[in-house]
Amino acid sequence: MDFITYIHWDVSPEIFKLGWFSVRWYGLMFAVGFLGGYYMGERMFKYEKIDLKWLESLFMYLIIATIVGARLGHVIFYGWDYYSQHPFEIIKVWHGGLASHGGALGIAIALFYWSRKVSKRPLVWVLDRVVIPTALVAALIRFGNLMNSEIYGVETTMPWGFIFLRNDEMVAKHPTQIYESLSYLITFGTVLWMYWKTTSKDRQGLITGVFFIMVFAARFFIEFVKEDQEAFEAAMTLNMGQILSIPFVLTGIFLVLRALKRELIVYKV
Image 1: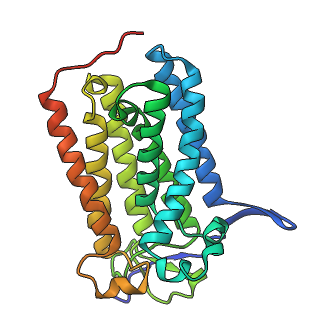
Image 2: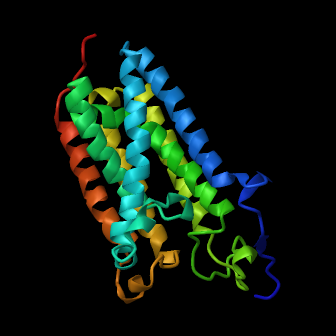
């Protein structure tokens, strides 16, 4: 297979740097994702004639919950042995270490509180709207991981394999960041279509269920060609990412089945 020409990846994670200040692709993708999410949320709220003050508070809840949840998810699920001995390192988010499963749990908890305090509507009502921009944010973040040359796969002989030169890799690896990003973009297109072109938004939990199934089933299978993030995963049949994905997929199946059996719920404004 020596004739295969692989992709030699040596892109800088920084867009530009001025002294101590730098703008990185990962941070830019985060920012673009949240701004795009706010715009989509604004369109949905206006369409449903919902007070935009709800959106402002919801946006703040989401930003805080995503960062705190993703950080604590990494700390608890992937690095507890280290962080339990170095607790002050937990707050150093800029050193890297965010877990998407933790982010999802953080968002769910924050939205449960927001639903009780602000909207007075069921949790699945807001989830059905939040998961739409979330799928786009997830796709952009994985692109940021690609620009950081991180979270990639095991060795491959496929012609689209990436040799991550910045990490001193000598062989081609699966660009699992691209696999995940594309799967999340497909999910985004699916749930966006469901919201605008069908009655799915009035079947509480249906959009959320489809989102959970598509995102976390893709994550489960892609993990088979992804390198372990932590050393302890080498001794596991399924790695941590796969184990954490299973409850989300099962929850998604439950939500879809329940939504299809229930009548449409349309809120009056």
